[in-house]
Length: 262
Image 1 (cartoon, rainbow, N blue to C red):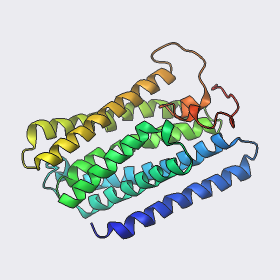
Image 2: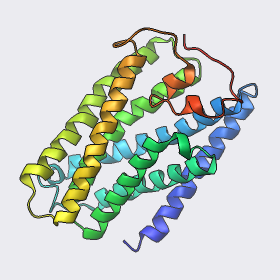
Image 3: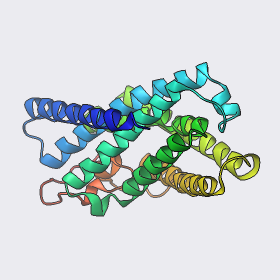
Image 4: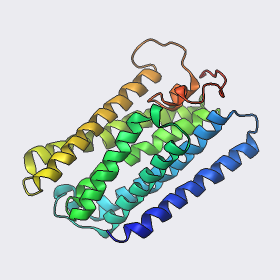
């Protein structure tokens, strides 16, 4: 893992550059926007870039190395290692970003998710085993492409277009295909099939995947509520719709005006 000391800072710098470029362009084209809306869009653009690149990398990696799925413990792939580093760089950047902007107290679920993911990936890379588990887990980024694209469209006033409606449906479909299915498979694999991994690593990854399972269920139920499939169809704040976990609605409340979805 010695290369991590060069790769991770470079990735943090890359994502930070994307953030500042996005924020500059938003300020230039939408100078009337309040800070919280501008920041949320810039954050979503960074997240979309990560999801798009890592989603393509993940599908390519698993297509070229199907053994990563059939035998997540012993299978090896250098591309899978780079895929893991790429997401670790993003999680590290997002973690730093949350603290820089004083949003830690209202981003607890994201912090737990990023911490467990980063720690789990570190343990996998150090052990040089279960590389396939990390790759299968990162299939979630395929769904995250639609999650962040949905938010970007909503924030940029495309929330009533047919394209936005299609993205909303794709978001829910891929939620089950690329989040729930891989997580369920990996939990089953670690619990019933894998007996070669060290007990500490197996237990830690089971705990991490259990939280991820909860996180996925939370996301799914939030989207089903927001999109009107469950619950009352009450008027919803734009910031809650863009962030299904609801943290942004509590941030910078003095800086944002009340905005409602169409």
